[in-house]
Length: 315
Image (tube, rainbow, N blue to C red; front, side, top):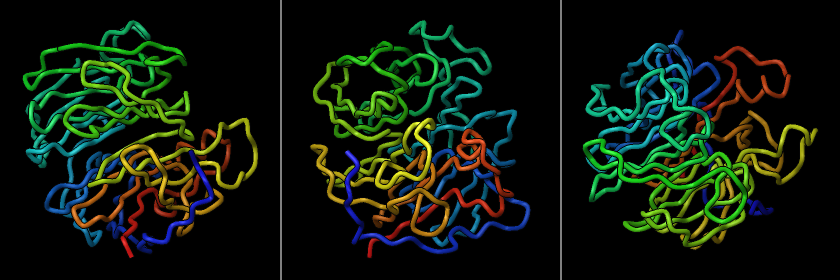
């Protein structure tokens, strides 16, 4: 789905955010979410797992350690202002207050289900809460290729999906979001598509997409973070992911954020992994650049020199 669209409606904010000395995301800001108050919640792999930022990029607070969340992966703001945290390393999904107080846990910390058993969880990746029923949907991506649904009390309702490339099958369902009260969009990452399901797991639509990693809705638009091509495709390939695409609700691409080639300098992305849109339309993109460079066998700069959280504002 990547094209040669060039963005004309957003521009990056240089030098954002402003982290104090000693506080870093360790080059991996795994996911980002924005509350109704505009505060930005960054679930990251630095020493403080959750860092809360004001819209201007200054630090408002933070909490969480590597023991709590060994591999932060996804964060979503719920309609009531609470957060859903998805940790692939401990195989849990937590619902927490903005200050970190836990109110619900799905899964058992440190106890994964057998890989590809279909049972929750084995390295889950993302979660979404229905704004009315408060049902929670979980993408169980890295070790299960499964979607799970829970009610507001944490009782399991249903699961669907299985490894494969056919309709309704999944290969690392990585990012999810509710399109409306009746439909769930799933970034079927390694199948290079987004599948749209009803809330009982019935397939409604499927869109080809380049390496979709995360998806969020804002108003009448969808924002999709795209990873680059597979690592065996060497070199800097133009217009091959490493961007954020903007689409209408039927999957039609209308805009693109990022350069033609991957990079960590202003205006480009290397590994967009999480995405959020603020109340004013500002787009926040979290990248796992230290992880990505390591996988490529390239030198990893010091964390303070490796940007991994970007802010793009409407012009």
